[in-house]
Image (tube, rainbow, N blue to C red; front, side):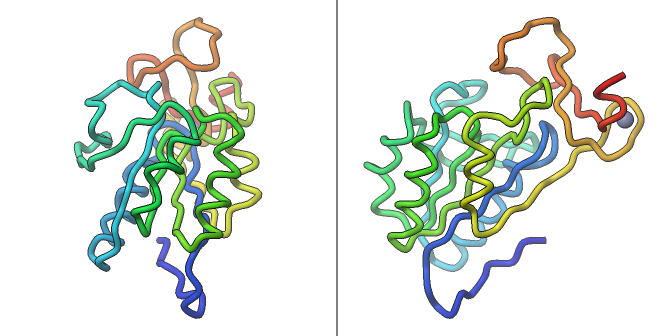
Length: 186
Ligand code: ZN
C-alpha cells in the first residue's frame, strides 16, 4: 500500500501506477487523490479526450467511484489548467504522446505532486506509448496486477478477445481479459 512520502517537506514528485486492464489502476489513483483531499490539498484530474467510454465530466472507476475530471486533447492542455492545483492526477496516460513526460517533469519541478495511471503494455504485450519513459522519470512506481481470467493466477497482460489489430480499441469486459504470462501466450 502506497503511503505519501514526506520528503523533508520538499514538494513535487512523480508517481506512476501501472498494470494491465482490470488491475485497479484508476481505483488506486482515486484512492490517492481522495487522501490528498482529506489533507486539504487541491486536486485536479485529467484524462485524454479519447477515453469517452463514460461520462466526459467524470472518471468512473469500475466500482463506480466518481471523481470530476478534465478531458484534455493533449498534454499541453494539462499545463494550462494544472496551475491552480497542488496534486495532479492523470488517468489513461498511455493515450498521450511523449510530451506528457516533459509536462509531468515540469509540474513536479514546480512543486506539484503528479500521480499518473496507465496501461504499461498494449494488447500485444509491448510497452504502451509514453509509459516506459514515465516509469523511468518517476520517483515512485507501483505495478498492479489483475487476476488471470483463464487460470486464476496473477495477470500482467491485457488479452484482446477480438481480432481487431489497432493498438487502441476502447472497451471493457466484452473485448479484453486479464491474463497471466502463460495464458496470454497460449
Ligand atoms: Zn493464467
